[in-house]
Image (cartoon, rainbow, N blue to C red; front, side, top):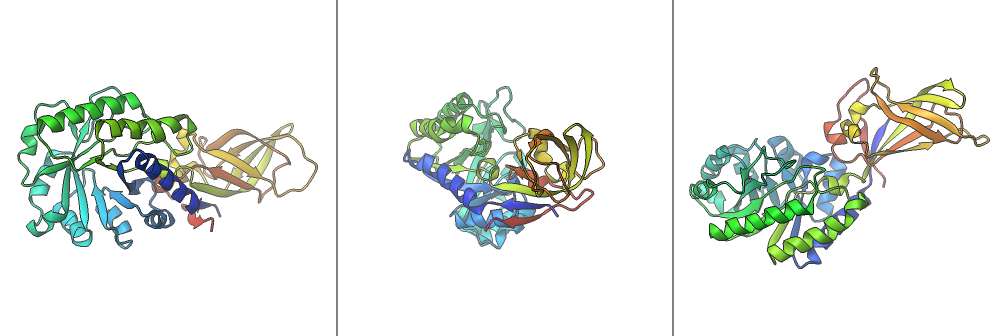
Length: 351
């Protein structure tokens, strides 16, 4: 049966690489791994082993990480409630609570007074620009922000933002960071942290290497020197750290030296397949004279669209039992996978 394979060492390498990029610019940096990205047990355990914490959006995610005894938590999203916040505060040393809607303001003021010393309140903002997510938080240019902040029973100490996934532009970061600087100076906010959210490309997307690991830390350091920086990176940490190992379950010849094979998983098990950021490795069990065989790779479902590859060149005629490794599917695939035709594959580690 197909199975997800987690590379724990790769996760630790990616965490160290991201932390190092900011610390090299003399920034205090802390990773709060985005649990929604991949909440399989081996991934969450490895995050703990890498001396990092968690960013969550719901009670469901809190229950996933609670037994790992996090010291600090970032809480985001529209599903916050007083009961959840009080339970988290009872179990952690610090809770970063990022306000992103009017209801959140009321929740903050309803928190038990004894727990408030553990609470650090941030405000989520967004840049009013094309392609940037604006569903959550407040327009940084809004004239109403100062009035909203005054309704809080305790000081605002953080600013949070999140650019949309696959919309990584240094120019957007520069514009928003400068607007944030203007806002906190004008409102006389004593800023303790800047939460730059997630949205960072995967660690193996080399086209972004200079932007993520050099330009972004340098930019933040120039505008907010010495400030504590929080990142809720998810994709950057796990995208290239999980593969899906499958087997050929049937095949048919569809032309001269051309075959169609079906494997024991399907695209409903990796719902981020549409991004086409994965790559396939075919491992033949048949030992024979090497040929140049072209093969289409399909899943085991009844859907016409359940195709992983239009054309893969393999060395021998495919047979049942051959291995197909689908690489780089660690981000969101496991989290969004659904039981369909066959169950969601089990998760193993490469140890």
